[in-house]
Amino acid sequence: MPKEKALTGKEKLFCFYCAEGRDARTAAAMAGFNVLPQRAAAKLLEREEISKEIAKRLGQNASGREEVCAGYRRLAFGSVADALRLVFSQEPLEAHELEALDLLNISDLKRPKGGGLEIKFFDRLKALEKLKELSEETARQEEGNPFFRALEKGAMALAQNRDDDEEGKEEE
Image 1 (cartoon, rainbow, N blue to C red):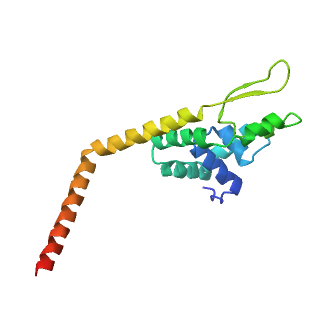
Image 2 (image 1 turned 30 degrees about the horizontal axis):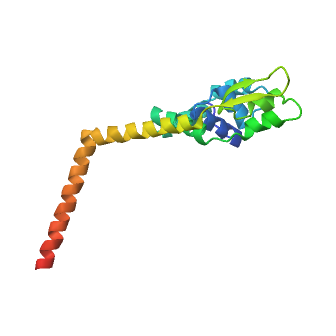
Image 3 (image 1 turned 120 degrees about the horizontal axis):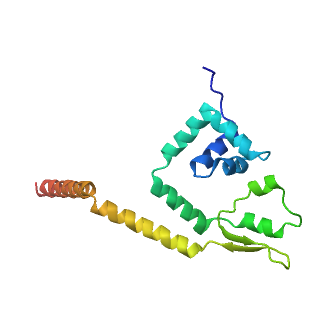
């Protein structure tokens, strides 16, 4: 069995982006593998240490709900700098430059007949509303969970016992 070698910074970034839910090709481009990112991604995914790092990072993600929340956060609070770079670039960007742009916030992209570029972004307010719904749903689930209610009752009983003990000591 070949010895595992330490991951480079670009490889760690690739693992991070993969674990965050990006497809391997996009993850490779965003990590800096600009020349043929799809091939680079395929080669990286063949390596055992890469697979282990991605699995480790996926294990650190709390749940699917947390991933959804992260996506909505990116839509609500994400930067539009790369989209502006695309609009204001004097010359057309090369393929590897386009691959590295973070254009998640864009819902529609058009080039009108008169020239220029028309960009529509996802609605940030809707993303914020969805985040609020998800957080309220999580709070309802935790509130309605019998285990959490039992923990809460136990904590209140302990606090009450402690208060009673302190009152008893003051009276003595």
